[in-house]
Length: 190
Image (cartoon, rainbow, N blue to C red):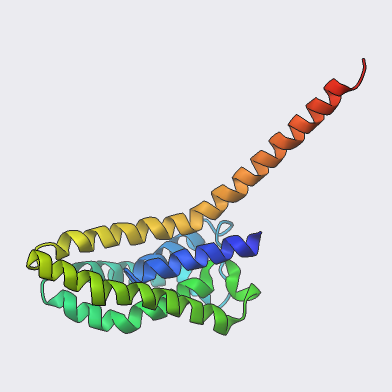
């Protein structure tokens, strides 16, 4: 079950890296730094929780967010991010939820690379050109803001949902055992 939840987390983080390369890495780093029992990163991915790396990722998030909202610069940013986002997705996939220890590292990196690369390709080659063409470029900033919000929301949920699912499973198991015990007690003669 833990492996399956880890894989869901990894796919969610790598998909959000296709929208913004640094948001999922920052989310993973912050959660690993401030709640290490929630997300325990193995070497070398534990570097994401280093305070200096977190500061660097925060600066890179701001740079990418600003660059993505400036006309003409956003297209250059998308070209640069064609390499960066798939790599970030590979790192996020491999680092999250100790997947790297349960799955071949090359497979984990390849999966993250493909997922983030696919999301980025759809965004840069289909969605953004369509938005630019239909709105004369006016829709790029709102779409970029929506992408940043979606990347943040997806990254946080990718880590939190597996925890909620695990907690819900335990609560349902306890309720089922309690129901079974009370039913068994009612069926016995007094």
